[in-house]
Length: 138
Image 1 (spheres, helix red, strand yellow):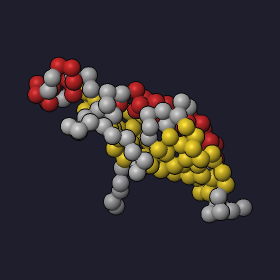
Image 2 (image 1 turned 60 degrees about the vertical axis):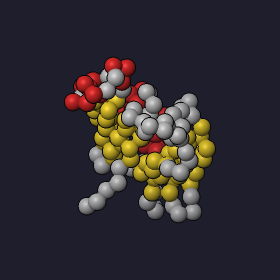
Image 3 (image 1 turned 90 degrees about the horizontal axis):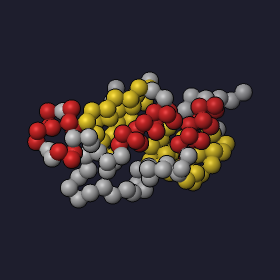
Image 4 (image 1 turned 30 degrees about the vertical axis):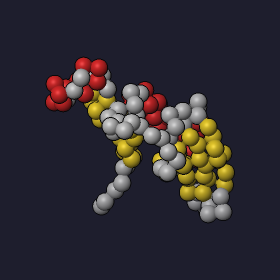
């Protein structure tokens, strides 16, 4: 089966952000710095502590990230959102509260016409999240 995973790019605060996401979402976080990689000798000393690759995994969820910004720098936009499909009302409420801390709760959780509990936010790192819990009909 083909899947699409999310890859976030940061500018020096990847470890901080991914640790925050682990605290919010749970899972296992693996991090590799440039200094720990074969690229270490090819890049400047000040980049040794930058994150080459990080991955947060929990079940089917995979969130990847790096501090490796393009030559033109990092430009945050509003064209991409991370969609978190939750498995319970408790999970969506806890995740929403945790991810919104220090950010902006742009769309509070609400029951929708399509039968879901849904909301949106921008976290303290400027990333946009949509949270969805498909409720079963009683």
